[in-house]
Image 1 (cartoon, rainbow, N blue to C red):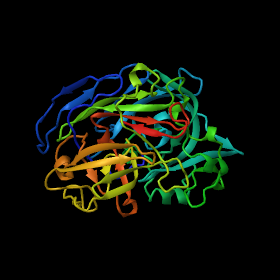
Image 2 (cartoon, rainbow, N blue to C red):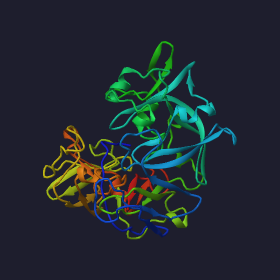
Image 3 (cartoon, rainbow, N blue to C red):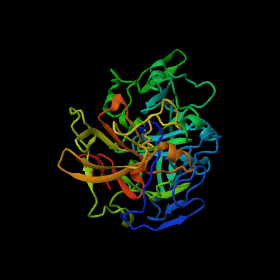
Image 4 (cartoon, helix red, strand yellow):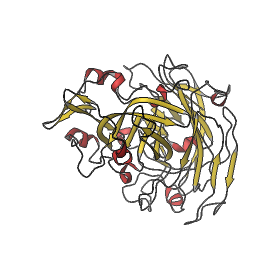
Amino acid sequence: MRCAELLLAAALLLAACGGGNSVETRCVGNCNGITPGQAGPEVAVLAPQGPNTVEVRVDSGPDSGFALGVTNLPYVSVTVCAPGSTTACTTVDHVFLDTGSIGFRVLKSAVASLNLPLATSNGGTVAECYPFVIGAVWGPIARADLALGGESAANLPVQIIDDGATAQPAAPADCVAAANGELLNSVSRLQAKGVLGVGMLRYDCGLACEAGSYAGTVTLYQRCDAAGCTPLAVPGDEQVANPVVHFAVNNNGTLIVLPAVPDGGASLARGRLVFGIGTQTNNQLPPAASLLRMQTDPLQADYLYVATTIGSRRYPYSYVDSGSNGLFFDDTALPTRCAAAGAGSSWYCPASAQARNATLSDPYGNIAAVSFNILSADLLFASSNVAYATLGGAAGAADANAFVWGLPFFFGRGVYTSIWGQALATNGPWVAF
């Protein structure tokens, strides 16, 4: 998720992307402007189709009694099976689609009937604390077979998020601290039944966890027994893995296609998640696409980032992330402290729509121009919509040099995320749109 607060936004017509698209818009309420309490249209992009695709839904979230619903969260459904079984299976709906994290993580209650085999080490259970920008998840590592559309990954290391009344084993103190006291251990806290992390790496940690070197960071992998939990070194192929890497053919990245939404937002947005880049006729990279390569030197402060420039302001730590529900960046010209969002809110609430022209650049000379608008979060939240393209908020003092191109960036375009080390990205990962 690399997520921040939850935010909202808007756009208009769908841009073409690889494989061709078909747009279907059905009005179920107020289709012009923003009227408090009224719903906007339902919008959908129906292509690409094929066995390497699944539907993405931006809707009001799982049926769990959210008082206010959710905003700008993309969901997919994932079928989970016990390793090697075709009968011990369940389909988990409302799995959060996240290009900013790695691996499949699912609430224990959603897969309890499968009795998935847990990973062990010297008689103890292998567990993980996986932090996001806000909150963290805790629970054991298990093995499972996953299926999405016609794609499958067998015997994959996944994380079971312990959502029991008392987690077993209990989350260590450094995990609770990394979560800022907010362990995402329920449907209402996670706002999903699981997370599908399809970011630009093969597995969720890498060399540091292989060596068990956690100095200065939260301890991700731990061995837990009755005496407690201790740091654990875990080989790469036993770390929580990016499921896409384990698909037979379409394993080098993803394409997310979402429809554009009107300025007032949409009550439902349906799009497509396409597996593979350049592997099928429906996932070809268009010749005119803008492509930005991540910084691949780990000694550089902007490692795995690109830069965003707006006017004279430069944000060197920028990234594209479907797991962030707004555009997050600091802009002193945009007022926060919105009335409806609460006193502690960092959403932007300008008196009128504010346009910004941005330039994205990478360390290798590639650039891309992106224009966007920011509308008042108070105005947007007054509707009963869930999908917005003009929602933005401040990143905060700790992230003053960051620009998070969250889900509003995805509306109205196709966004490609490559996976480092796979075909087309052997020298480093990239995003394209």
